[in-house]
Length: 116
Image (cartoon, helix red, strand yellow):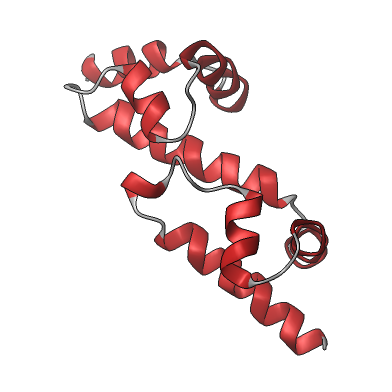
């Protein structure tokens, strides 16, 4: 049983890491649970047990890292479009959680990258 649980958590890590940019807006705990044929509750508990981070936080971290890369390197994509690409319809909310994570707003990150 323990080995099966570890395999599920490893599968979740693979799903998160291999998710395509056009699928980022779909990814959620419930979406991953469906991919693994397991309940959201059980998946969340397993992931927390083996990775010491809540699955929801891991997903958010992955989305924000992707957004950071896009903001830094894709000048032709507006920040509100990047927010939408990574799954946030509300760009103001996206900016708040981005700032909480990186201690800079998306605009500040973009401006600092263009100043180089």
